[in-house]
View (cartoon, rainbow, N blue to C red):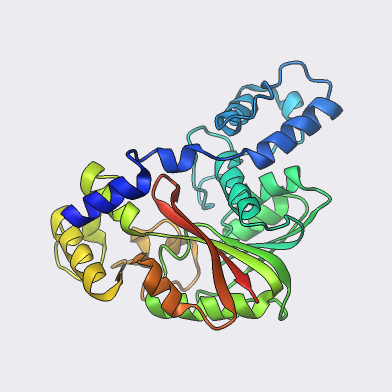
Length: 328
């Protein structure tokens, strides 16, 4: 584990939080600017473009009256129980911070944020809701997820998005070269190697030439977080591969396989052990669990014509590596 401790220290430049604190709040600034110009509201957050702006807008949404939220066009409620939703630090539907990070990564990679965008694995649409509010005239938004209730709720509550149900394995219901931008946050962190390969090929099919694909992975930074800080702390016994996993047994097996093979995958033992799967009709666990990979292994899986143009270490959730890939 010492090698991962050392690699973590170099990559994070001395701190686990540093990697996610330095970003431009792209969507939050655009939303705030529109609110100031259009609503006449006087209790809006300050326009200081710092990393806390996304959090301050989320706080404003939580504190505002229903009338103020409606006037600001930020009135989408939290989904009910039974509809998959990944909660943020505050109990609001919108994911301002992670959407800001995604947009900042795209812009730093030289990507023009316009055209047809697909959020693959969109759940109930909290990132799409922010994108719709920030780029109403620049983006044509699509969402895809295998959880039918999430897609039904998204369609009923998030305007301006075409949302579709997909199966756990390809294909998607879109024509070749349909999208200029595809995003998939915390999806390749769960696919088996076989699913990774299949979905990379599908992404290439539906991505337009010159288009860009952003996705996140578990890499050495994430492993070091688990070793050094015990973050995150999943219930390891829910994963396959061992009758009674403990944290240390799991991590030792993970590091050994990463060193030898460049990747590590363990599926969930049962559908009910994971919040995404239990909302999917006829779900299976074979290709969904925890996936870790090195950059070299990732490169070996990319089909010809998909090229990495940017990598950021520990960028989302303080742990996930973020890649931007271009289709040539």
